[in-house]
Length: 211
Image (cartoon, rainbow, N blue to C red; front, side):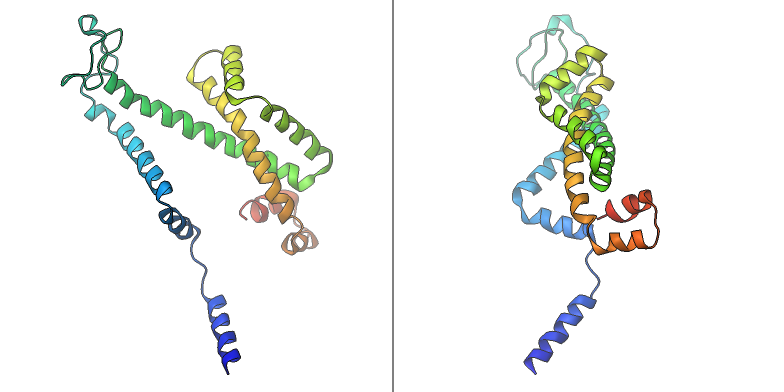
């Protein structure tokens, strides 16, 4: 009877709908205090970046020559720079640039890196060799050196900085995606897709990448 009861509970557990991935992610996040503190810091940065025009005490680009190199005070909480600009205002506005560069660079790197990693892992052979050797070449160069080289070649502006960061991150996304695809493409559901005559793009984007 006890064995039957155990089997029945197991069947009920399997029949229950699985929790949404977002709920699982949130539960893992709140279990770790360090992750929770990091999330709060990121949300604070995002909030400051969004409300920057309304909370900065001075325009970030206001030049006041007679107030240059001022120490922290009640008027300028973080002091001023060599042009008399308020450092606190510039830090708050700088959060906008930092978030823009980070979000755009990571998004671009994720799209390209995941695609390259999926192609390398799924097709293998010469495609895998060519893609991964290029990836290894970029990963062999320190990130800061790669960024300096790109900015030196293309020019010092925000777009080129985003490209430089994205190129380095592409390699990381590609390696992780390739490893996952290599383990998944041997599963039975992929073989079933091949048996049903599904095309490679459908198998990659519909069945492999979501997993």
